[in-house]
Length: 550
Image (cartoon, rainbow, N blue to C red; front, top):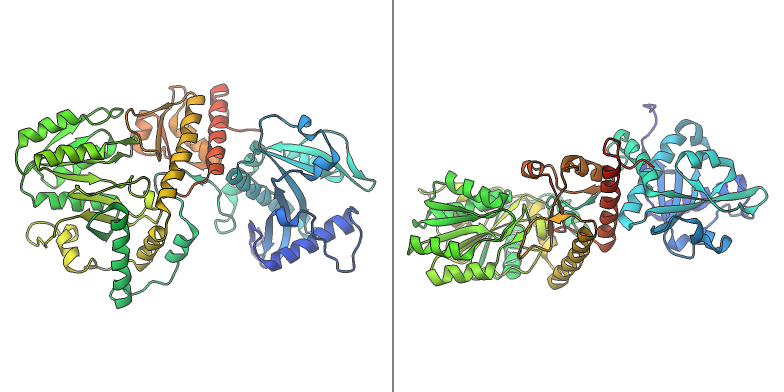
C-alpha cells in the first residue's frame, strides 16, 4: 500500500454521518451509474429496507469508500421478483440477503480489490455472529464474472429493467470464508477486528459495560474513593456465593489456589488432595511445592470422585484433617458433588478447600461449609483475567514468619484488602461484571445453551468426556483417531470459532473443548454447531485437503 495513503478501516455503520454518506453513495451508484431509481435534486437515496439493514462499510479517514448491506428478514427483495425463491436455493440453510454493494469510483482501480475483500471478510464475520450460511444477491449483469469468481452461483431468470438488469445468485458461507482468511492474514491489525466467536474457558467474551469500565483512566489504589469501591466490590462475590469474606488479589486463578494452599499450611494437620483431571493434578503439584502433609488420591479423568474412598482416607487421618479438590474439573467438565463433599467433611470435622474457578458465575455455588475456595475474575464472572479471588469464613490473621507475604490471607485482611499496588482498571471491570446481573437468568441461559450443544454432539456422534454430574458450561470432546485435535481446532479458528485445543493435555489426549462461560447467544451456538459439522465432515471426506474450499 502507498505509504502516503491512509489505512482503510472496515466496520459496521453506527454514526449519523456514516449513514448520510451511505445514502449519497447509494444515489451515485444506483441512480446515476446504474439507472435503477429516478433522479432526485437531493442526490441521496435512502434504501427501502434501511431500518432493517446492517451496513458494512469501508472508510478512509472520514470518507466512505465502499459499502454493502446485509438483511436476514423475509420477505427479501428477491421474494418479490421470484415467488418460488426457496426452490432455487440449497436446502437446510440459514438465508440472508446481500444488497447495495458499492465502491466509490475513484477507488476501484487503485484499491478496489482491497475494499471488496475487506467488506466480504466483514460480511463473513457478520454471518458467523448471526448464524447465516447462505447469501443471496441480485448481481448486476455488468459484474457477473466478478460475482462468479467470488463463489456466487446464478439461478433463475434475469430481473429488473433494460439498463438495470440483475442476475439472482447465491453463495455459501464457505465462499466468504476463503476470502476472509486471505484478507485477515494480510490486513493491518488496527483496520479490522477478527470476528471469531469465543468458546474458550478463558479469556472469555465480556459485556460492553465491562470493557468500558476497564478503559477508564487508572486511579491511585490509595485514594479513599477507590478503597470504598474496593470494599463494595468485595461484597459482590460474597453475596453471589454466600461466603463471609473475599480477598481480591492481583494474579491468576493459580495464585488463588496458592493462597488457599498457604492457608492450609497454617492448619498443621494432614489432608487429602483429590483429583479426577488435569486441574486436580495441578492442586497436587501446588500442595507438594508448599510442602503440605497430604495424601494424593487420583481417580480416572472420565469418572466422578469416589466419595466412599475419600471418606475412608479422611477417617484414617483423624482430627484436624482437610480435603482439597476441584468443584468443576475444567479439563473434562466433571462437576464434583459439592453437597456430598460438604457432608463428608462435616461428619469428620475436616476442613473442605475448593478450586471453584470454573463454577463461580457459571452455576449456583454455595460456599457455606467450605473453609477456603479459589476463584478468578475471568471464566464465569466474565471479566478480564488478572484478579485472584480467595473466599473464606474464618478470621484470617497475618502469618509473617510462616508464609510468603503475597500469599498471606491475613495480611490482605489486615490491610483492608489492598496491601500492595492494585489495578483500578481490573477492579472496576470486575465490579461491572458482577453488579446488577440477573444471576438466575444467567444460569438458566447457560443451561439452555448447554442443552443445544449436548443434543448436537449426540447427533454428530461425538463422545463427550465424563460421566455423572457435568458442568453445563464445559464440553470436552474426544475426537476419533482419524481426526487430529490441533488441526480441527485450527480449522475451526479459521472458520470463525475459538475453541480450546492447544493445552498440552488436550493435544496429548486428542481432545477439543467448548466453553459457555463467557457472553454467548443461541445464534452463536447454532453457528458453532454448523461450523463443527462443516469442518469435521470436510476432514473426514478429504483429510489431505485444506478445509472449507467452496
